[in-house]
Picture 1 (spheres, rainbow over the protein chains, first blue to last red):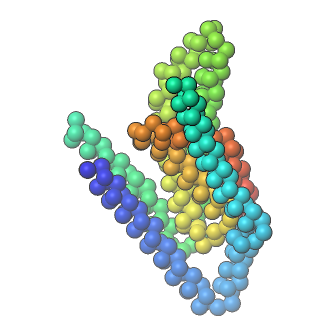
Picture 2: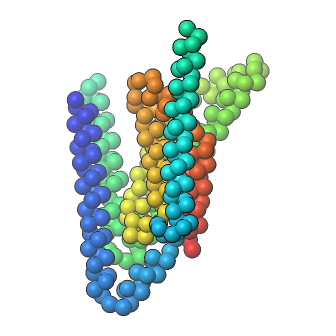
Picture 3: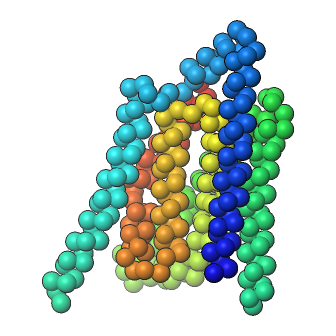
Length: 91
Length: 173
């Protein structure tokens, strides 16, 4: 019971710590927009960095990763099931 | 014994809290280049912790399996490795946890520039972490086997390494 409450407190603290900076980051975005052309240009420059979500390569990487994880989870489940079937057939 | 255990849990809780609270506070203390440098350093901490935690552990496991496979002459090596297995496993868990939280904090602090490689990396890291926790903390036989098989999948390890390299290359550009 005690460990469950510790885990719960940890979870609440983690969500608080991660949510508050995200809210501030959102506010910073608005400030950048208000500051004028220079800041907007800087924002666009940052958006050009990396492989953004929504582009063709970005989608391939993201969906490829999710598919790979799904396949490995399915393969693991299949392996466990087949080994269980084998052991039940032996006995 | 129970008091000791509670104290230990409290110390871990406090340590984790400091690790999670201090980096964001530093990052948001000033909106200048120093803050961005600190957040970037967290990413390198995650990469370093991952390499130090995993390369020796995987190498040790491979050597142990090879020693058992080849037979009697190398059996002594396998026995010696077995004696140090537990401390090395704890080291692996500890460093990987530090690397995971450092990496996640780095990602959340730079979430404004989120791209598909970073998101994929976060997903793979979380899957590996959850399977590791499943392996360590569940008592059910089925979930233990599931955790073991999923955590040790070579494909996922390769995918994680490839995404880390891609993330560094894309981030440097």
